[in-house]
Image (cartoon, rainbow, N blue to C red):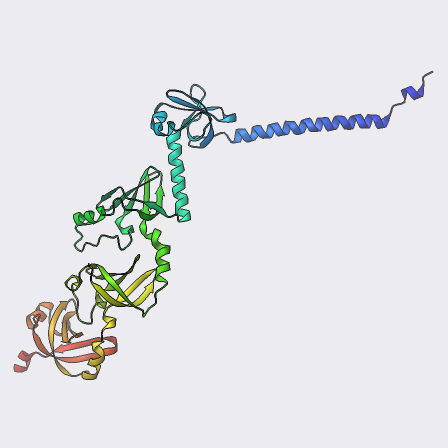
Length: 388
């Protein structure tokens, strides 16, 4: 007879054993999944050509360096890549972590071929892009000058600073555009520290473009904010061009006096009136986009105010022919007050110049007079026609 107590199956014990086995299996499954997950991540992260990788240097030989790339194997820097980076190689020691660029995923010896020089260049171009995005200001000194601008070196890469991107006080103002004279002016900036920003970076073309304007923009705006339209300022003439005069108001700030704002009378050549270094006073007539426009004539009595009291439409006046233009002849009635004799009064420009000579005085009739707008038109009183 069988003892039922000995053969009785303990259901709870079986459940416990099954439960323990399940936990163990579950743990093993989880560990397997973890290992698989790591492998998947490693496989998916296998470096491709042109990728940047990082690892410690495990061996340095006469013409090669070996880098531990972990699960990806061993990287090697040798041959022309070793020679190209010889300056960098001198600074590397065993155990140093280096960043390199993959130039061959697996060579015949099973190594991942790497380039230190290309990695360095890639990092520099990446920094250049960051500098553009962050509007970083860099203190750099031009190394050379050419007729178009200045050569600037940054992080071992040569860049270009076009003359058009120089601040006004550094821009070579050469009236006749003589390239040799422009070059001489640009050479004066070689070796001088300038505040520059990167405005364009093209690694494929190897082009890095700088600007001095952007570098001074914030500082210039802060200076300009101190001034308002109507303010009277004193300054120094820094340059003359055919369209006006540049005046230095303070360090880092220049204003332009347009040729039409120099005097109430006709001004054809600012160089005949001013010299660099002349001290002048002017009035601010516009502040816009970080630029200041000035007027010298605004500080002088407006001759049209007095002319309004003396002349009216229909008056017969005498005037001196002071200039010919595409519309006719400009005639000065008195200092600062002039009117136009339109070419339509004559059959052609040639006929106009036959009747009127520069510098000579003739009689005219005022046909339009708007002193507040400083406008006047005149009609030539031809004595020859009267005689006929």
